[in-house]
Amino acid sequence: MESNIDLYREPDGNNRPPVKQPGKNDKSSKKIYIWLPLCIALSIAVGIFIGNKFSVFGFSGGWISNSSSGTKKIETIFDYINKSYVDTVNINEIVESAIPSIISELDPHSTYISAENMSLSGDELEGHFSGIGVEFMITNDTVAIVNVIPGGPSEAVGIIPGDRIVYVNDSLFAGNEVSEDKVFRNLRGKKNTKVKLGIKRATSKDIINFEVTRADVPVKTVPASYMLDNKIGYIKVNKFGSTTYNEFISAIARLKKQGCESFIVDLQQNTGGYMGAAITMVNEFLSNGDMIVYTEGRSYPRENVFADGSGTCKDNTLVVLVDEGSASASEIFAGAMQDNDRGLIVGRRSFGKGLVQNRFTFKDGSALQLTIARYHTPSGRCIQKAYTKGDRSDYDLDLINRYNRGEFDSRDSIKLDNLPLFHTSAGRPVYGDDGILSDVFIPRDTAGVNSYYLRVANSGLMREYAFNYTEQHRDAISKNATWQEALKYLERQPLVDLLAEYAYQKGIRRQPYLIEQARKLLHTQLTSFIIRNIYGEEGFYPVFQKDDLIIKEAVKLIKEGKASPKAISEESYK
Image (cartoon, rainbow, N blue to C red; front, side, top):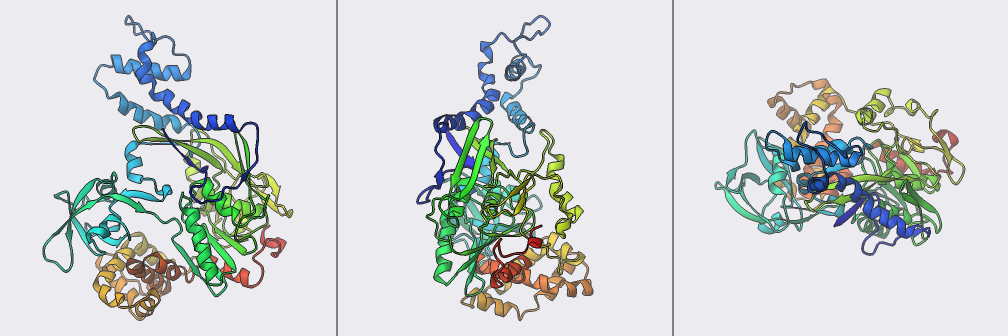
């Protein structure tokens, strides 16, 4: 058996584990942790195989007995269908269809993942997936290689950015039927399996054939870290996986060598991941004995986690950026900093996911992620927002409802009246049950966002044109040794006007006033995409984020000496 934990995993390798509170229930909690999801999930499927041991029905009148309890009733139904249904049925398919419906009656984050979907998604939280190692986009009904991942199998055989995949395993792989899902199904797969690719390259009239052996492709969870000035460093964390702590601590070390004294940790749109990764990262900033988090569930005794004092950044200024897409492990990180008055939280109210899932993987490769506990921030808050068991409609619409209420634009739209009140270690008021409320509110940036920009961006034409421009000018751009030099070259090019012409040819009419209004935003995003196509994430983030309001505000707070919960006024976090 294989068991992975979403939001609760011990750190791997050289990670320093935090101090846990000892208790008498350690052994029993471990047993529960292992067997609880197994008992629930397997009670559904195992009944198919043990049904013959029960006297489940009589043939006169179809009478069914011994089926009053829930699990036995399910076993009875499956067995009765298997033995007596008028047509031949695939009972395994029925089970696969039934399990998601059963799990949906629980909370919004308990879920069943089929073996097929597990194989497609890979295990990116483990820092890799199995595939050919390329980034792609679909343009003009063909799969275009945008980037080849360094160290991956495609790079090894000589595939380069700009190549277009037109054949897969000798079958045509182009046209209206090509979709992202079809690409994933054909290019991802088990490690050491082979796939034949027919490539069209701009420099060759003939199709070039490659045989690529699928392998584990590394996935970076900390895609960017760079200096914003001579003392302030920025670190972007996309998710919390098994490699995140090592990537994070490497970024810290690299920035400190460049003179970094203050850190901005960006968790915007970070939907979470492993709890252990968040804990070890928090440990870098807290003093010995400071609480990081505690978890508790009906069959999962309370477990406290404290900092062990070995962190390397206990004296560095810290600002944490969050928004409505920051969830789960991101909220553990932000909540620990806020409740310990250790770092300033800047941005907008976070998502509000305070549930802990345990992942149990079945032998067929499918998996059950079952909620087994709630986590609480050091002040005692559970930040899980409200939900109704078995009904996800309101839960799934929550972010849209927040937007419609104006919450992304004004802090006053956030209603705190019915939320439980807690206090940080310094006595500041904080609230539970509905995400992490930022200490300093920053509205969404709408500069340049108009109807023309939205049509171009939502149609995918901006990324498509950026790719086409890259291919047409790759030699000229690549002559620049660094992305900084390439940026200077691109800033002299009429990129927005060229994009407007391209969009016009694709059916989006020119609107000169709106184009001019959105020009700065369009140019920034175009240049960032073009630079990413050649120089990767290292150049993308500094260009894409150069006018970012929330980063600018964080830098301003640090420079003004206000990047501390104790330094900001009461009005900043009311």
